[in-house]
Length: 121
Image (cartoon, rainbow, N blue to C red; front, side, top):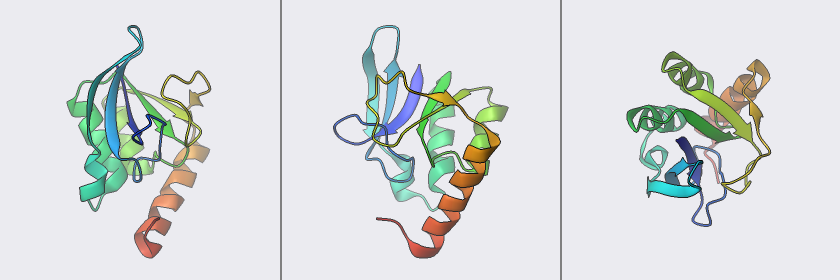
């Protein structure tokens, strides 16, 4: 199962900005669960999504570029969940993704700090 955050049109969004948290069964090609994104009500936005994906038993996380700050990365790595990155706004069924790397974690952490200081749109 893939856990991700999407908008109402099921396009992958940055963890702190998407409306829905979605659990997607890639073998059946169907959405198993959709619920309100827990990051929207949390001061620790990206880690709230990571924690919920772990709780839901996902084996993969599909994160939009800018989603995996260090705390979220650390939680998912500890839970042995595979982390994949795609472009913000990609379709849920995208095959255009890549494995997380340290540059992604650094960029996402910087973006998270900026959002906390300035707020986000």
